[in-house]
Image (cartoon, rainbow, N blue to C red; front, side, top):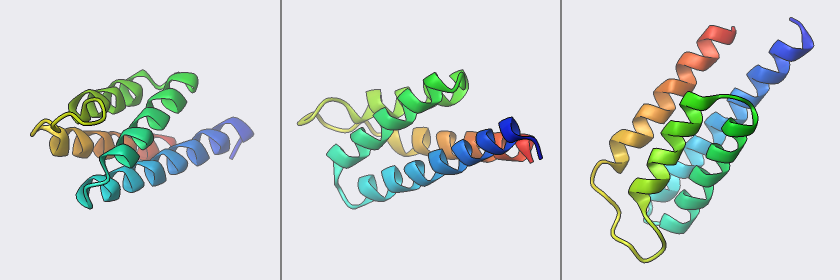
Length: 94
């Protein structure tokens, strides 16, 4: 495996961990942590030229809303869409 592919695969794994942490935070009602993780995923995916992942994470952030706002009902589906996109990305790399 070449270094670039290995680096990309490691990044996808890290993004998957952040996605799991974001989902766990939201399930337990820690919306601030979920927002933090969604923002982190958006920024890292953008920096890595992964526009689909960045857009999906940004959608999660928008549905979570700003601190104090009501979380939109579609946030669970948006989180699932992000997780599935990460699975697809990982499969394409392996």
